Length: 306
Image (cartoon, rainbow, N blue to C red; front, side, top):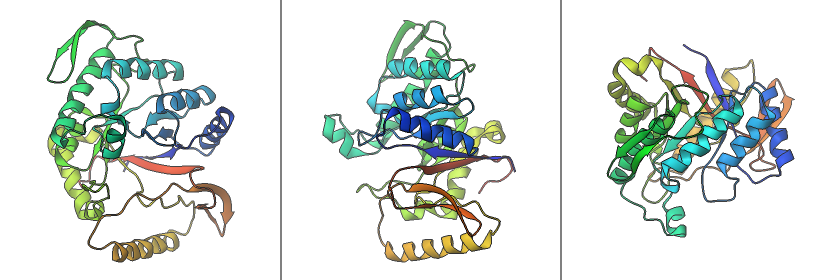
């Protein structure tokens, strides 16, 4: 078992000093990185927020969670991301996905293509990003993007490029992650109505997802990181009592399964992170939504397929 990495999610609109304060707090608490969602909702731009976090910290890695490939041309995105990597001294993770939230597409007049098309565009975009991160003249002719003898600038600090995080809930995207990513995100499957397929959150479904990644990755698999996030937004708990919080978590999941049996459910609202010890635990409270979310954890695992 390799070390687990905990990521703090910061998504709401706040002032620069407030965002800086939260980033410094996350760093002091020992978080591995800060991640910022990428939606056309009430939130800061992920690229700008990542640059701000990087400027006031020295150890935190920064990433989106995750960038919607359809919202930016990969050549423009390459320059933005390489700039963050340079400004942070090499602390960027490139997290990118095919896009899934149809109402956002509809709101700005962008066609919401079938999943296979969005996934194909994502695959091409990753090739373009990796090519432009090289700093050498790069050409590419695909079905969706064309690059002609263009050398991307600036050149990222991390060579040959920053780590890529690619995540999804279906076989096609997870197979792409297995072949191209350094970090693989095991996401729930999104239903056509925008809800979450509860079955995709089960242990059996997770084992199946990892098997797809493992098959595609081949000899690369032992070097990959696996990333998951708590779709219930259950608070992080620091405790010496493993059974107590675990029992409460299991009970809550059982109740939720009964309540949502027969259909999907939407993701919960982020919760306020409260660092006051209570009975040996440090947990979150829902008094102020969105203040400080422990958004995800990821761990390196090389010997287990489930």
